[in-house]
Amino acid sequence: MHTATFFVELGAVILSLGVLARLAGIVGLSPVPFYLLAGLAFGSGGLIPLVTTRDFIQTGAQIGVVLLLLVLGIEYSAEELVRNLRTHASTGVIDLVLNSVPGIVAGLLLGWGPVSTLALAGVTAVSSSGIISKVISDLGRLGNRETPAVLSVLVFEDLAMAIYLPVLTGLLAQKALGATVLSVGVALVALAVVMVLSLRFGSVLSRAIFSPNNEVLLLQVVGLTLLVAGVAEHLEISAGVGAFLVGIALSGRVAERTRPILTPLRDIFAAVFFVFFGLQTVPSGLVSSLGPAVLLGLAGVASKLITGWVAARKAGVAVPGRIRAGTSLIARGEFSVVIAGLALGSGLEPRLAPLATAYVILMAVIGPIAARVADPLTRRFYRPKAVQQ
Image 1 (cartoon, one colour):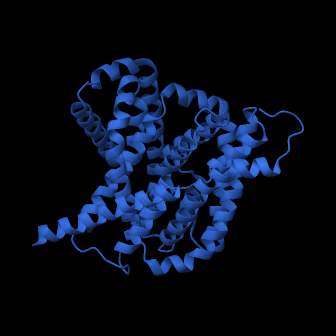
Image 2 (cartoon, rainbow, N blue to C red):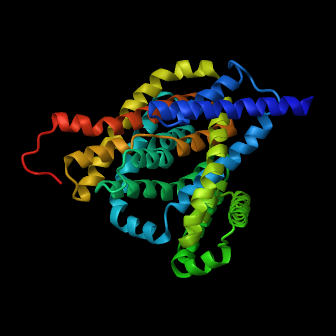
């Protein structure tokens, strides 16, 4: 009977997610806010609380984080990372500083401690690579002049997370300063080693892992990723950072072949991850968090518009492209939820989860809409004095 109930609950959850993803596609939005709302509906105080599948969904959520960051890492080669760091390092710093400030100010005004404030700064700072890459692809902007600048900002943010996550994890665990510095040092060394291996021995790694058989390739890549993620957790770096490093190391034929066969698996577990985050949030807490979330959202829109404008201007892009770049960067998503999830698991600040959930829902909705209407609004109100590129 227990098994039957488990399958019924799990089937209902996954089917509901499929319906919500379909609805999101119809209205032209990211499914992330819909998944978060589904978690609220299935959680404590929701419409249909889960009974037997909660532990399974928790484990699935952890796998979802690993697969999200693995696929994100696959999108970038070590060469691209080095090149983008050289070209857009200053823009990346501006981006992180600008977008951390709203979270820091909000944490101080809410009377939170320094660690919770640092976590909220991370939530507001980092754009959603998953949502943004999908929006750019859906709108046919992959070949636009501003797109490399947008992707460079995302790459810089992802690299910054390789430092930020070990720091936050150490502070949440209340480790000594020396242990936290050691975790950051290990993460930086691991990142450097992976980049050197990718640059110098990428072809060797590709030949060792590559298989024309999709089943063999998928098992090898997922197995390696989970193994490295587990080792990273033991070293107190973060399983997500370990998975991201594996993704960077995979290049050439392996990356090209792995991406399409891994994406459906990632989508399922990523959806479970967002649902689990929603499960841990009491719906009533969202109501009290709505006001601060809206204010944070307004600040977040403005700060990302500035970031996109600066990045595209540095790349020599005209005003319409700068506006497209800014609106493309608005959406927040997976990293923001990962950060809030780490803080929630520590039991440090109970108000962080509902505030982060409300904030991510708002930004995941506003971002794709703003990106979609950027061109029509620009054409209507912007009158160039000369021919613009």
